[in-house]
Length: 92
Length: 153
Image (tube, rainbow over the protein chains, first blue to last red):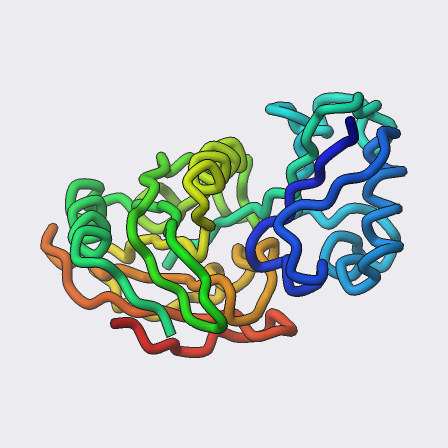
């Protein structure tokens, strides 16, 4: 078993075209770090210049936003899915 | 280029008209083949904009008539349902009540989380006096600086 990271459509171009990536379990921060190591172009999409996750990028473990868990320190057990979800907003 | 099935196009028009005078929002589900997107169905999402979502300090002066927000939990639901059918989310749509189907600066700012490129379209359905009017499609440039008109069939 491993952890699956689900990549949204528009970011797949920065992840070798993959819709999901399987990694060994760890914390959210460690797993996203591994993901960016494998696919460096994703880094700029996910993180700002200060190294913080961009405010309009949401990271969910299962059905929970990591902002309401332990943030990047949230443990992700085997078999769980991390979803990278874009915020979409606007208006005329 | 993006193509819409007749049912997808009709469903967007219906959602936009039913939501009038508020803005509606949803996701486009279909297949991505090369650079072309083929939308077979839509996912209607509730417009969950609130002042807390605000992108500027003056957001409280606005309302669902001129703002939209798609809850990430709705995106997850739609994404899971799409993947289960071997489909992808290939774009999103929202309406412009009594306003042209041209993206606003706020639309551009609110699209930054998606990322630029040709794999995700931003559709805008104009609604005038409660009746669906023109539909346009846009791509966000790679650097996120502007929208580029996209052929929509």
